[in-house]
Image (cartoon, rainbow, N blue to C red; front, side, top):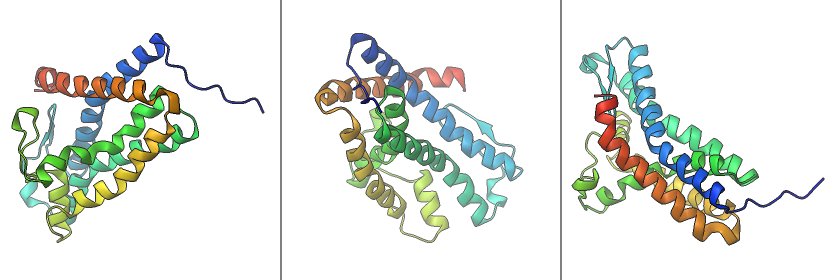
Length: 198
């Protein structure tokens, strides 16, 4: 069996990684919110999809289990895509596999809230109220932050595994390119998303 060729950090490969990373945030937002939308519609709600949320008129009539399913649908999509991506990127590194794997980084957005820091101008408030994870915890009669802590406990070693899957001599180039791409995509979606899905 021929030895697998290491991924190279040519300008073209880095541009590809940046573009894939840039698109990751809007795609993740749409997949996450789309899962909430599909679950809500499945329970007969006249849900409406927006760029960063799903309106759920009539949700107060739903039972606890139905609310749990709707709240868990978005994070479940993130975890499924992310876990498949982790398995793929560990098997063989490619930019696309890396961008799928980083979907397991979702719980990192909650770190400021967990330590009581509000970064409102970045969309990271000091409270988790209204988050999917708090809704799930309450539906399961758990403390509010328990699902977030569980996600962080699972995501942390996976993120280390993802970094280790990046070819050793390429990490200091790949990680900044991917990070800037993801953050730019996230910021771009927050600016343009309201025009695409008001």
